[in-house]
Length: 238
Ligand code: SF4
Image (cartoon, rainbow, N blue to C red; front, side, top):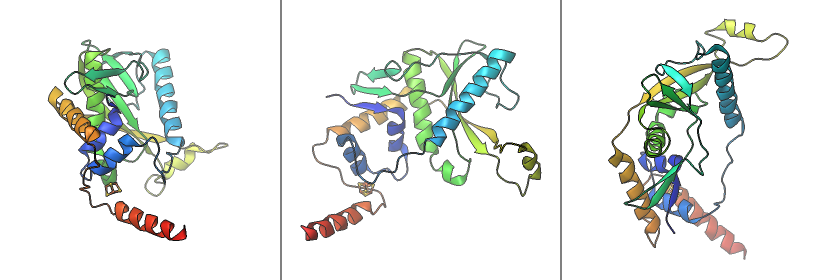
C-alpha cells in the first residue's frame, strides 16, 4: 500500500536528531506506548485566534493592527480539509497531506500560507524550525498543485503569551473582573524551497517505509536501550 504522510510527519525528517529507526517504527505501528497526548489548549488557542482575525476582517475589511504584516491581503481563501488538500507525488507515489491554518490571497493574486504556533519564539523553538520549514513548504507544494497556485510567501506566526509582568506591569491592567491573558504575535518568514526539496524528502520517507527491517538508529537518544532494559525486567516477571 502506498504511503500517506502528513506535512508535519514529513518535517521530522529534517530534524537534526532525526532517527530513521523511530520513523520506521511509527509508520508501522498504529499506536505506540508511553505517548503523552498534546494538551487541547493549544488547538483551542489557535482556533480562537483564527476566529478573532476572521471576524475582525469580515467586519472591518482589513486585518487587525496587531496582526503582523504578511503582504497586501485581499481575501481569506477557504482551506479544504485534509481529505481534499493532498497530492500524490508521481515519482514516489507518496500522498502528502495536511491543512494550513490560514491562506490569504494577496493583491497580485498569489497566495500566502500561515501556520500558527502557540509558543514563545525561543532558542528551543528555533530548534524545531527545520520541521516547520518543511511543514509550510509541504503546504505550498500541495497548494501549487491543487487549490492555491501560485503560493508566493509563507509565514510562521508565533502566539507568544504576555506573561512578563516584571518588565511590563501594565499587563496587570488587562484583568479586572475577569482574568485576561493576551498574546503578542511574532512573524517569521519561511523561504519557499524548490520542488525537489519536498520530493527528496518524500523519496526518503518512502525508502524508509519500504525497508523490510528497521533501519539502524542514528540519534543520540537512549530510549531503545531503556526499552530493552524494560523488556528484560518485564520478562523476569513471567
Ligand atoms: S534510538 Fe531513540 S529515536 Fe531512535 S529508535 Fe530508539 S527510541 Fe527511537
